[in-house]
Image (tube, rainbow, N blue to C red; front, side, top):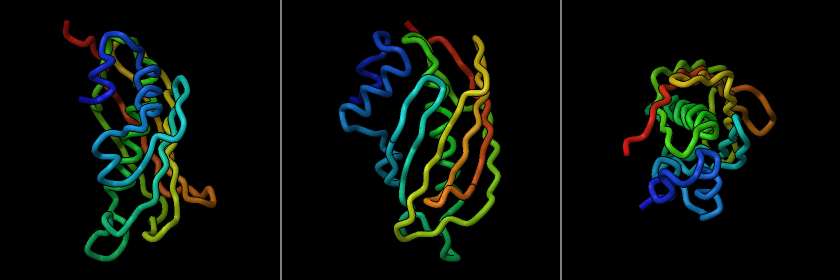
Amino acid sequence: MNVIEEAAGSLSGIEQLRALKAAGRRPPIADTLDFDLAEIEKGRVVFAGVPGVNALNPIGSIHGGYAATLLDSACGCAAHTMLSATQGYTTLELKVSYHRALKAGGEPVRAEGVVLSIGRRTAFVEAKLVDAQGKLCASATSTLLVFDLPG
């Protein structure tokens, strides 16, 4: 079981994410790519990770999917912080721009997602991925569908 499913219907979105972090748990994708939910506030989250050799592409650089995954996670979880206990969300669109290559081997990155606006049915979120020196590596905008959870 996961903390989000265990808390469904009783905790707001931000409370669910805080419970996940407090329990020292993370979604399987975060285990696979080794990143963590570092900061949580209403309308804003930060993920932190260190791209490893498991994320290399055939030409020896970090695969763009690593950055896209952190940015999508940051966008989705930023929207998640704004939801009630009876709401869910899913990504409708993710637009990623790559500004500089990520390097394997110990340089941490941070993906910050911020809600631009949220309504009854849609959320608009942006995220930025920066390296340890604060240089922009990738950015994203996302449109998310907000819906009522069943039963």
